Image (cartoon, rainbow, N blue to C red; front, side, top):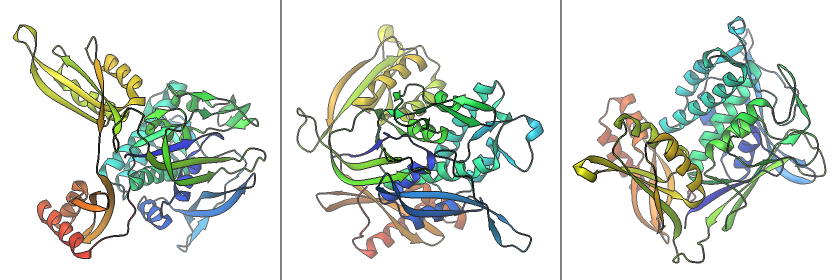
Length: 431
């Protein structure tokens, strides 16, 4: 059965709450801190247990630090009274482009030198670009002129990069998000007093189900909206599943009554009534195209994956009157059908699509990390009913080590497999 991660946003969400919920669900703090330490952003990560309306939860606070003249790090505390997050993106003109602000290019440079996988770095930069594009559209200015205030930049970089690392660590692609509680009333931002949800938050929520409930105030922040809409394959109630792990991520305030937390539930999807035992239902969507610039298939494929596709592939076919064409096939979870069909009609020249329900059965998978000459390599281990079927070193990790050491990529792959095989069964959890 496939693993699924469900975010229950009954009290909204923020970037720090998402990170805290994933830590509470089992993300190792030391692994998280190691990944964040490579960013070159001076900070301290405070992870504590707190109570919110009597419910125990994990709270993650990012404390920016600056180097004193003698070299020691000085911590600067934030005002914790601004709801879920202390900082946010703000649009400013070039007159503010000094040491206290960071552009999208600045943040992309930092992320490019992080310990995230290449795919993770691309994902993090794409998320920040989407946030900057939302701010640019709101303030009618080019993306290049959008700057992040220093406090907001530190918090946002840590929250986004930490969340990207956490999602990679869990290795769960099937992510479902509840309707989002956005709160009510007004919120103070750099440009004045604005209604909740803030303009950037609202722009990021296109296509997502929202509602307002509970005490007045901001319940959903831009970073929370950015991460959840960026990773959700579907929105709705909790899917049929067996519960394995539950995590609670606390917001800054304890408002009483309703706990100010974000809940994440991780487990195995249960099959639908008509699915064979041990399988999950998916959809296959297909369409033939013979009148589109072939260069567009690349961006379309990337956007299909971003919209929740499990797999996308192209097949050369011969169409009417002997014309060469392309069969576009998309495999996807059933809840992702509507956004993917909309994307196909919007991004391609097809006039219609067809789809059918399939059932798939997959091997259990987990990540294990081995140390080779020149660095670390993740190994994806496939198993069935507790019996190991095979293991494959992560190619991007092998390329990174090979580039750093001057080895051949295939030699790094072979060494990673030898090290993994020699150490015997590992105790790392199945993801």
